[in-house]
Amino acid sequence: MATKTTKEINPSKLEERSGAKPKAVRVNWKNLYNDLPTHVAEALRAARLKPEQLIAKTDGELMAIEGIKEEDVNSIRAIYTSESAPVATQIAEDETKEEIQEAVAKKVIKAKSRSKKYKSMAKMVKKDTLHTTQEAITVLASLAKSTKLKTVELHLNTRETGLKGELKLPHSTGKVVKVAIFSDKVAAQINAGKIDFDILLATPADMPKLAKFARILGPKGVMPNPRSGTITDNPDKRAAELTTGGTLTYKTEAKFPIIHLNLGPITQDSKDLADNINECLKGIGLGKIKSAFLTCTHTPSVKLSLGTI
Image 1 (cartoon, rainbow, N blue to C red):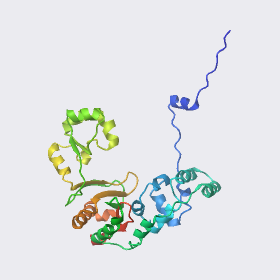
Image 2 (cartoon, rainbow, N blue to C red):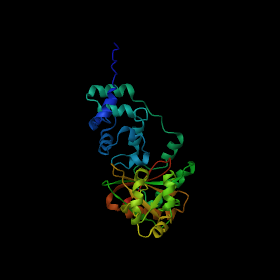
Image 3 (cartoon, rainbow, N blue to C red):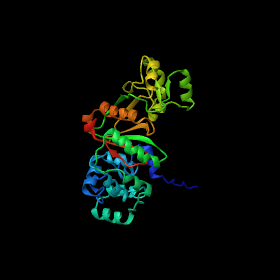
Image 4 (cartoon, helix red, strand yellow):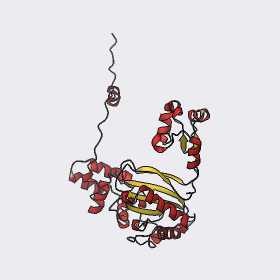
């Protein structure tokens, strides 16, 4: 008589079938950043930045966090690298202080020091000096001479999350925005996986047809919705407004009170650039901004004096 063999069941497969979800691991924020100065650790914990998010931030983005200065960025970079971030996160999930200290001692790897070019640029920036917009642009223009990428970036540390809107700038940023108006032809392109536009406009009557594309357009941030002004009764007029180059949308990060804006190349007219920067600050609301930093790609940041706007 043949005997039946027992098939071994994979626990993970059983979990999938039962519909049970793995329990999310909570980060113990008190265990994070104990190897940094107290004020730096408190600022990073308040911003709810995990180590893997921390290392992905630019210097300007880090200095946009309240309480973080340029010298603090250097101390962060000296410890937290792409190799050390996963270890640091695991440390934050551990229970005992002894495990934390042991893991730090064994696993944290020192970061490479700054390049000579960056150090040379940093000497040209006065760390704690507040600059007018025009002064900041002059400093950045001088720094950018030694860099290939010259995009001007404005990083704002705001008083709250959830800020978003649209800015009407007095001058073009130089960025070409591709705007499409929903039609049967555009629908066919979306079906074919061809999304070659930055903004998609639609009328209220188009929304039932667009519903089936929500899973495709939503993750890419191009699904029309009333709050972004991409659902309109007059899409042609709206397209003309958006393609002038003087319209800029903004919003804080999902979990952090920080706004990042790209304002075009440093090579544009300095007065036009200054006008655009000042309009950004006024449009968002000076009372909603704690601090503002202007930087150019791969250069140190320059802190702006909000009182002179």
